[in-house]
Image (cartoon, rainbow, N blue to C red; front, side, top):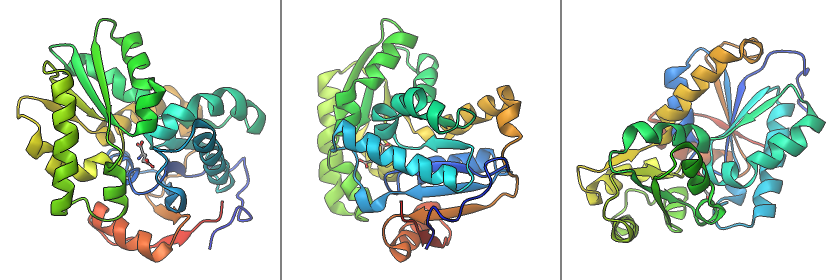
Length: 283
Ligand code: DGL
């Protein structure tokens, strides 16, 4: 069991922290480790309290801040919120209000901005669809960022409340998942038939990609965030040599979960295509 008593010295270099409410952030971690395999990583899934997507702003902020502090205590100088819901509801407050008080030299980065930065080059019609959790959609974060970076784009954000539970409970490949995937894709495309690019704006959704692809017409592009966030982090580290110097380079990854370590190890192994051993984290 890992607790925040196992602190490493703040001045020592450390791993990159990757946080999600559960298994979804593994899709980001995979992209990061493929693109930037030289660094060490600590993955934390708050499986005990997932899903976040239907929770209030206050709770998502509170849980995310706890997780960030926990990862800092594990020696991370840089934490990626590999969760759109946490990026939408907690990132700004943590960056602006909490970090200056906790340690102004540490950084917390999200997944929404890097994703939106790619959209201009992807869409020809300027009509984009965002699939996300109810929390991400209600926050309006994608609409605001897209309007800011691509004025004139038409954004339709659609919530898929059942998709995260399907993934968290190991039902992503089940025949039952087809019903919920088809239902939400049809609703999105009915709302704006000119959409030519769909963003999977929840890190859990790539785990449903084989089914999503089945119900989305071939000429519509589907963007997953793993590669996008990895390319964006690589660019960030080129521009921030001071942060790069504070990352250890052992190529390792530790997996932590707030729920059962055995269950996480088994499920994460399926998602990542290799065996992993997780430990329980007490936030
Ligand atoms: N994977 C998270 C996201 O990207 C949220 C899943 C949840 O609802 O907990 O939004």
